[in-house]
Length: 168
Image (cartoon, rainbow, N blue to C red; front, top):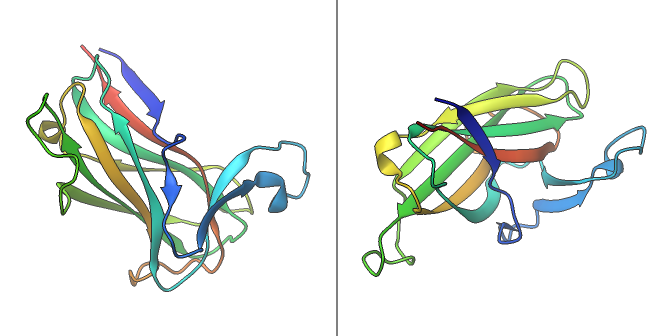
């Protein structure tokens, strides 16, 4: 049995319409401006702001699914609250890709880095029985400024959003 991680951010991932979530070069927030790469900025707001996307469950999926959030911030105090809502759609001509509501909603509260821009990982366990090989997983990923535990007064910078799972 092995554990795998795949990125679930891709060309079909889009920010919500709030204007508070957007992609920008990391060197806009970084100090050294050496490693140019794209990050997703989640501004500090008192609202729930996020991304929408989808991914396919890999052929070698067996179980133990998690969402791994790789992020950082210029803040060094406070907590960020991350939410992942999803629906898995499977079969061939059996389920609609245009459904209302979610199958599961999971949340993690993670502390700001101990020093500005340190790499952080936070994980959220998903229900294994909700997913099957080749399912199309439609998701929304949020920073939840409406949660009382959300106290970080700076933007959260998302580097990766990963689907972790085990195989046989």
